[in-house]
Amino acid sequence: MRVDLFDFRLPEERIALRPASPRDAARLLVVRSGEALRDATVRDLPDLLRPGDALVFNDTKVIPAQLEGSRIRGESRAAIGVTLHRRIDASTWRGFVRGAKKLKTGDRVSFPAGGSEASSSSPVCLLGALEGTVRNVMDGGEAEIAFDLSGAALDEALHAAGRMPLPPYIALKRDVDARDAADYQTAYAREEGAVAAPTAGLHFTPQLMQRLQDGGIETHFVTLHVGAGTFLPVKAEDTADHRMHAENGVVTAGTAAALNTARARGGRIVAVGTTSLRLLESAADDGGAIQPWAGATDIFITPGYRFRAVDVLMTNFHLPRSTLFMLVSAFAGLETMRAAYAHAVRSGYRFYSYGDASLLDRADWIG
Image (tube, rainbow, N blue to C red; front, top):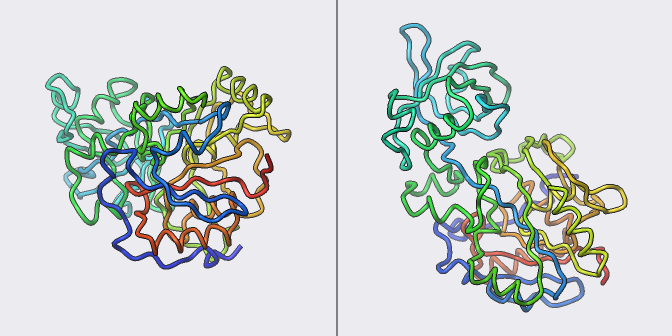
């Protein structure tokens, strides 16, 4: 499909620079086939779902994956910036590099301590810097870096050397600060590894989670470590020519069984965020049953995709020409979403990571 079909006018001031406070005070646009658009708030969600529905959250935890440092080659040094986006093994990460043209395989890199979560006993604080070797330089400004530390020691070092990787459309307008360490993390985050937040989940508070459970609505968790590739613009003119970056995820056997049971009882599978949806669709078989699953997914969902696992989607408002706007257009229908987004812009909804949310029924879902 032509990428320009997913373009729309978004005033700059509609991109939120801070989240709503409290979290569940964010606005929620309810989009249902055959019904008028309805303006609500996130705290109305328990009344918009049904007993027996199963909410699926992504419990990934954002790490401070933005690194600033130097490329070292003999006596030569050059400044570089790296946004890590996918872990390859215990010591190796793939990242997008600002200054990638300065890198060659075999170069050393060094990132001094400076992250807000550094402890006095961390490897970086003790050694002075997080260091590694460039293992591979790829197209598109990517590189693989094998760090000198691995496992838990590398994780601790990243907290000492890294900063919270806010999306560029926020970070270019203001500095990252201490508030973002909490704001850009879901209340239920527990599995470290993401370099971008599953932003639909940012709206949930412990109180809202309890109200959902009290209303007979199930809550389940999967893990998809969101990569920085989610921020990359679509440069191709046709969706067939765009390449998605892979992200690592897990659906446990227990969660898969619970979701299949909920659906067999007549409950709907409600994905909180596009990351939960993409993982569930990756784990679903041709009959729609969700299977235990672990691995990397680069699923790219555009109109024409046949959804197998998810019936309802809660998601934030996405940018023009983005893969995420393509996904919601596939889910609820392109014309439906164009009308919904036009309403959102006119009505002052706030867009993207720190913005408001929408609740979408699947266009071909009947029940």
